Length: 96
Image 1 (cartoon, helix red, strand yellow):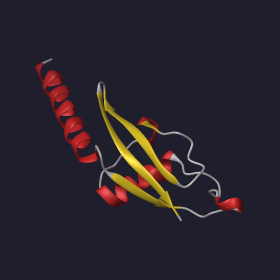
Image 2 (cartoon, one colour):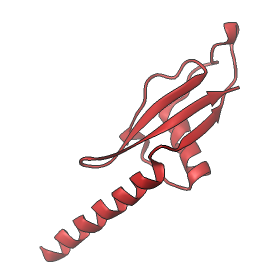
Image 3 (tube, one colour):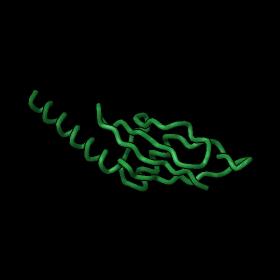
Image 4 (spheres, one colour):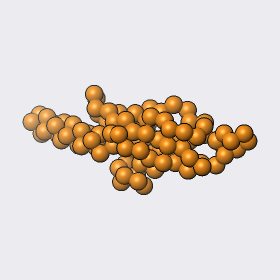
């Protein structure tokens, strides 16, 4: 039981550290333009998670990421739930 409590403390500490590393950061995703200058397709949470890993070296479970449907170029906010009550917000910049 003591080990479980210690493990939980470690998980919370790790989540807080990851949140601090992610919070306020920006990741840039390059995308192709389709007709009318809109995005060709959309940017998925899987692509964002891959870019976070490439840029920041942090592995994120894409299922824990909340982001609006990205169908245009611009900046979007992604919210990542790292642990109960611990979230990080970062900017996803979609450019050509």
